[in-house]
Image 1: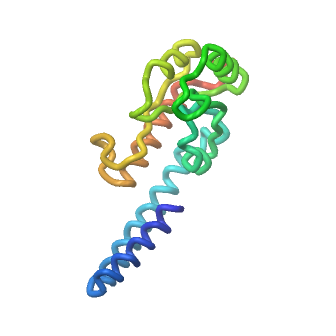
Image 2 (image 1 turned 90 degrees about the horizontal axis):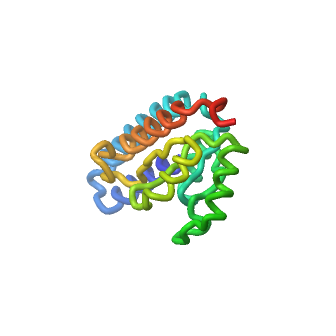
Amino acid sequence: ENVKIMTKTLAEGLAKLYPDEDENFKKRAETFNARLDQKLKEWINRMDPYKGAAVIVYHRSWPYFLNRFGLAAAGEVEPRPGISPTAKHLAELIKIVKEKNVRTIIREPYNEEKTPHKLAGETGIPVVLLVQAVGADAESTDYIAMTERNVKKLQEALSSVAPAQLG
């Protein structure tokens, strides 16, 4: 929903700079937002089976995304941004994974891989790499493509571990 607001605001700002293109900017913003509305319905439908699922995040960088799809962050790999987890913290995360039936670990491309993969090895849940920037990988050519990629990857990770496997 915030992207739709930003798109409209950008179109309005560009129209002030280039008044002759006002209608073009408005039309393109409306077209983009209509595409986004269509995809959002699809993504919500695809993620609906996982509503309420718990995940571990590397740090608190996915609140809007998780909220949109009804997922819950059960814990963070980094206790605070930039602070590596201690052995005690990792032990607490392993306990959380079992108690809260956590389904996956989310990390970003710029996060180190070793700790999330160690946690995955200890718990049997997958690590999923989600991106936050257009162009972060070959699939993320625009905002909609990036979000499609993230939904697809998260859906694959969540479906790879049945809740009953984790008890």
